[in-house]
Image (cartoon, rainbow, N blue to C red):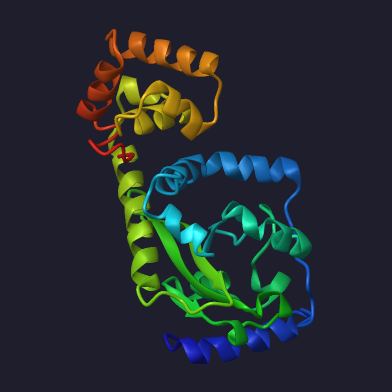
Length: 266
């Protein structure tokens, strides 16, 4: 069934049969802390890529200021990463919309994520098309994230906004983000070298920011770490890459296809 309207009708019926309360105003079903931590660890590569995409200096970060927010779900429909501007914090708190909640149809009715899960393609759902009161003001677009190395859908990414008209290019923007994530994942599979295997999340983030020709003091501010922590990681990178200056570690990272010349993760 490829017609989105037919699928919406079926989904609403399934929501009713599942006993979902259309008037519910809080998310309730969620993972416990231990299970959420385990799943976040499994998805750390995608989470890291999203952190790079939405770093404060990126063009995509402006979308957050406009009121857009992004939801990364695992293949089972549980939220494992939320990206949003702090002005939405109180609103999300009232809804109990946090990492770990379920967006599966049996837990909160029709929404873009579970429709995308069923159709295995990008879909858009406006506020009134949702089943529950929870989403009444949400305009959402969701897309699968494919691991082409393993030839399977491994996650779903949702781009949403409330109470304002969506950007005409919203579908294209989300597709571009998903495409970038998928390309990064492919490159990660291709790289099986010693240098890449020795880098942790913070090492890569430091390299990414430094590649943009930021001074160390700006790196500290961008990432939000202490000077001591930054110095410790840079010393590690000096030794690992066998160089003795900041430019050297950036060039080594670029030459080994860890980042590109703009600081993007490869």
